[in-house]
Length: 73
Image (cartoon, rainbow, N blue to C red; front, side, top):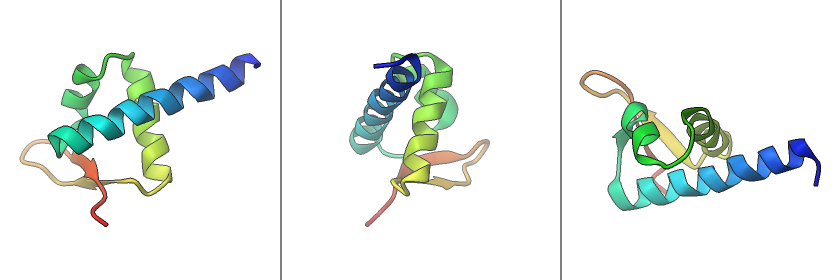
């Protein structure tokens, strides 16, 4: 596998961690999500982008910052 392929795979793994976290904990701010997931912040944000692109998550206005949650079916 080339370097780009392994990076994409790593983002996919972190996207899975983000999905699992949101399934278990519910809506959370992006800041808290990046602190709670054991991966570099950039990878967490790329994982969030991956899930957003696949329409798996949605964003909501929060009291001070946006919340992210799994999309309700």
